[in-house]
Image (cartoon, rainbow, N blue to C red; front, side, top):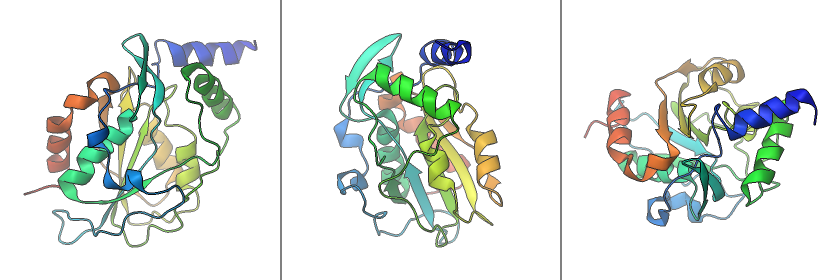
Amino acid sequence: MHPRRAVLRAALLGGAGAVLSACTDSPAASPSSASTPAGSASRSAPASSSSGGSRVLLAYFSRAGENYFNGGRKRLTVGNTEVVAGMISRLIGCDVHRVEAADPYPDDYEPTVARNVREQNEDARPAIANPLTSIDSYDTILLGSPIWNVRAPMIMTTLVAGLNFNGKTIHPLTTYAMSGLGNTERDYAASCPGAKLGEGLAVRGEEVADAEPGVEAWLRRTGLLTR
């Protein structure tokens, strides 16, 4: 194995954080858009927020299947980021766009690790089955994903490419094992020119089932929830 690849793979599996991080199975926590077929647009309900009619979009990528969990593995029916996205959508009623990979990631952990390492090494742009074509009607964009090897999956870079972020506020949202927000703030600052970067939220995957109080507090701090 090439030395650089070996280092990256070790980081993904170990101290840089596992990072197909896991969550407790919680199908009831998934957002209403999760039942929409791949390729469909965001759900059409207008977002409710505290900022005078501001429109909010939550765009997220989540992976179920075999995930990292407290040093071991756990098979999930609902991915950790999807669980948190469900909490957010219930609390603020935002529009939701779940990112679907055109080439779905493997169900098993190790092949997903290997694919992520390749995509990071190659600075790849994995294709999206249901890309966003415009965010013009939104003021605030929540970008949600797991943290894989200290970064959001490369499919999130595909998502934001070509969108006009001028005047938008971005809030990163991550689920993780050890890396918190990882490099998302740096990466989104570079890939979303013109956007203002707001406070992010990082939720440990193993604790995601109990995360709603922290999610609600974050939404209040950012002014997205006032009721």
